[in-house]
Length: 263
Image (cartoon, rainbow, N blue to C red; front, side, top):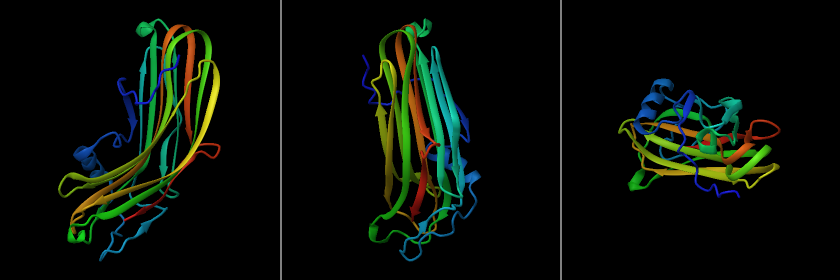
């Protein structure tokens, strides 16, 4: 019987590779980004309360990372490593995890693979938020994905969890005061209940992430937006039954595009 995989499993030991900044948070991430980013950012912060819209090609720093975990008889792979193209605004990745029932870990095996790709830049702000009101900032992503699960081999499954997750995030960090002043996110999960054979689900969304933040003229801000894709598989049982889960955000029309950032 399949279990409900509603909350993300986050208990596995993880290993990471890539730029490695997107998994950090707060002051640590901002300090690391400050080293990488080109001073002055876009140079297009609003003046006198007017807003501006940024579209590809983007300036700033393209970020990417890959985080995996494996317990028992499990494997992970990223056939397409996470990548963000500043010239087009496209984010691409394919994540895959497989777990097989075996004698290791008391018959429990689990795999998780998560990729992240996005953009960050510094922005010196030219005008303060007026009359105590917040400034509105928006990042918009268009996202198309395919989630696939396959169950093969012989054996007995006592329980299983397989799911994919897609998430888009947007944040503003004040380097002058060393604090996050606003963040927004969108996410979608695709759970499966497959005990034999294969199943595939297509999805699409426009993620419009809006932040209302009080910004101060003269302060410098790190603005970051990113796409995240994750697969998670966990099985318990005997014999040699394998459950594989794949999230495609790269081929056959699947992928994501950062359509715009409005400041």
